[in-house]
Image 1 (cartoon, rainbow, N blue to C red):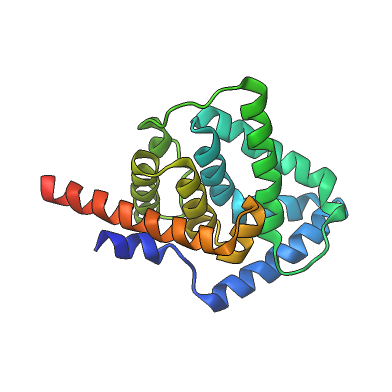
Image 2 (image 1 turned 90 degrees about the vertical axis):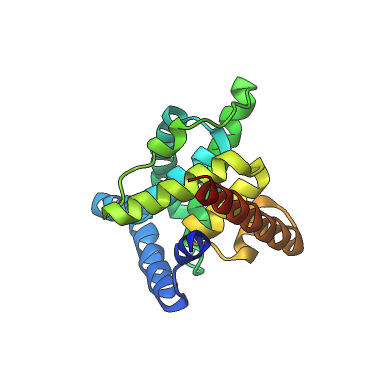
Length: 197
């Protein structure tokens, strides 16, 4: 049942295409200096960006700060974006670069804690927020850094596995393997959690 909740966070293909088209248009407008487009893009993507950054830096405060930096960076780099149907990939690449730069600069690799799940930005509804927190908490506890990033990019950010592979600089087979291994780990952890109750 809980694995179904994890899998249900993945959008169906027609919604994904519509969202990508909308995000493509918004990124182009952001590149032209349109502040309203930036606000709309933020509303559509901030939860995914935050979740991905949190999977990298493992600190809610740093993830929030880096999320803001990501959108500031998008303002200056959006003019170089060319609509190709991969706006989330572009946004996540900016977020990833900022997150990794922060880790290198501070030379720290913090441990995941319970506070990350509590720090997830509010969803549009309570059920969605509870589900997101459950998935994020489980991911933070049981997954390796690489598995966590693959899950966040695919299930939360909505990137296709090929896009995730390209963004992370990994072969597609490695990304697929990590994703399926991560789902199995999360399912096991969630099932053990239910049995313990």
